[in-house]
Image (cartoon, rainbow, N blue to C red; front, side, top):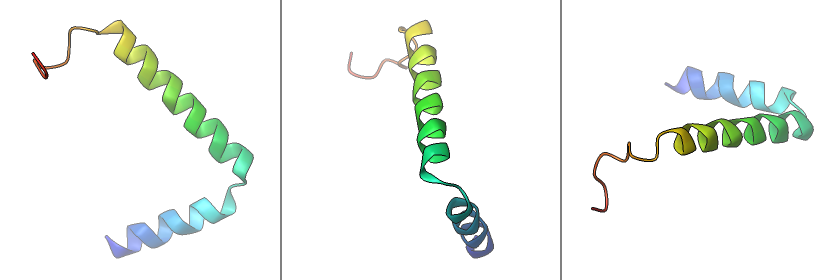
Length: 47
């Protein structure tokens, strides 16, 4: 697990902020589309 954290840290420092922003934006849009496509798939949370 420690080796994975180090690798992730090295990979994050090699990326510039514009790429990170793009990845976060794409991930947010994908999650939004998945949530909109399955509005009844909450697993009965809150009902």
